[in-house]
Length: 336
Image (cartoon, rainbow, N blue to C red; front, side):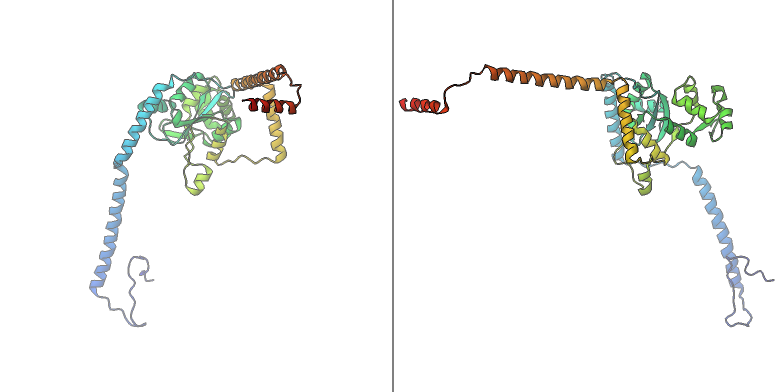
């Protein structure tokens, strides 16, 4: 069999009229071989360039206007840190024993804030860590407040995020804790033998909480919500500070899980249960202040009403008819 069609790069020579013999000149054959050799050399050159490009470190050119903007941000951030300690002391909320802290996409920050972010292991945008709900951690979060969001996660969110994205740093490799055998291998000395143990330890901030969180890698959730990933848009407003229970919905959006919509009956039952729970639990400081303000307002209104009643009682009622009073006034004017 003729192997003329083996190489697709070679030109296929055909006679002008079917049945005639092909007159192939030596120059045509030489040109064809030369083209094949050139293609091979070009492919080898491109492969070499790709290898070199991967090893080279290129320098990014930054716009001078951007540098000025960042320097101004650093200056304002230093002023903010100076005034932090003049504000009220941080108080621990009673909503949970653990805090979920996520780095937002705000750039900049002074050297103090960057050092604090490095110590909390949340330098990259979207990285998330678990921290104990104590006064010390709240004081640390005060320093980096514009650059992070935090809140009180529920058990479902902690369970979901650890089942999906839990990973550990083993030497230079990152090992995803997808199996209970891996958890037992890497965290057995901390008393962790399965994912459920890990979830309970983190959510309840147990005795081995610090050891476990140090070994776990910061969870990288990205910088897009479900709305943004569809349209490739960034958030219009950068959220920061303590957002309490809103952190659950935020993390669900990053994980791609949406909260199921409740029916009207279920929503009414949920609100009723919430009100009953409010009545049972002790009032917070904010609620106490609100009640005191309402009491003061009521007392003020009662005093004003009492004064008006007294004034009305002290005024003597005029026994003279109205016509006589008008006539007296007219007489006075005429005398003048």
